[in-house]
Image 1 (cartoon, one colour):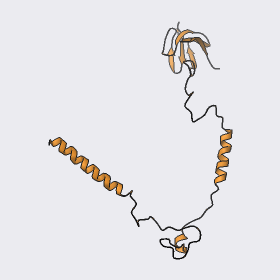
Image 2 (cartoon, rainbow, N blue to C red):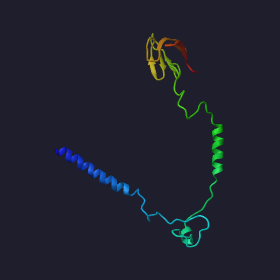
Image 3 (cartoon, rainbow, N blue to C red):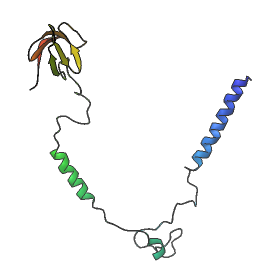
Image 4 (spheres, rainbow, N blue to C red):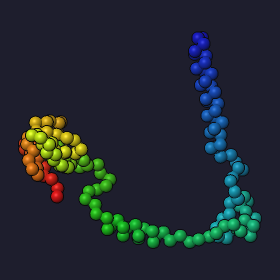
Length: 158
C-alpha cells in the first residue's frame, strides 16, 4: 500500500477509537444510577431495589407545587391580544408580492439641473433602471416609476 493510504487508515482507526470511548459515557450500565430512586407515595416495606425515604435522603429536597394552569391562562390572554394578520406557521404570502411592494421614497435631492431620488437607500436619477423599476420623472414631492405592469408613483411621507 501507499504511504498516504496507510496514514489515512491510521487516522480513521484513531478517530474510531476516540468515538467509541466518547460514546461509552452515553451508555447506561446496570447499577450505575445517578442517585437513589425515591418513590412517591406509600411503598411496601422491603421492596427490592427501592430505597425507603428517610430524613437523610429528603433533607435537601424542597417540594413546591407547580400551577400549570395559570401559565397557560396567561399565555392564552397574551395570544388573544396580539394582532396576527396571517398564520405565523405558514410561509405563503411572505415578502413583497410585486416590485411595487416594499418600495419607499426616502428623499429627493435637488442639486443642479438633475434631481436625485433616494429610494430604499439607493440614489437614482431620471432614466436610471434596476431589475424592479425604471425612474420616469422626479418631481417636487413624488417620483414616477415604471415596472412591468405600468407606471406608478412614490410620494414623500410627511
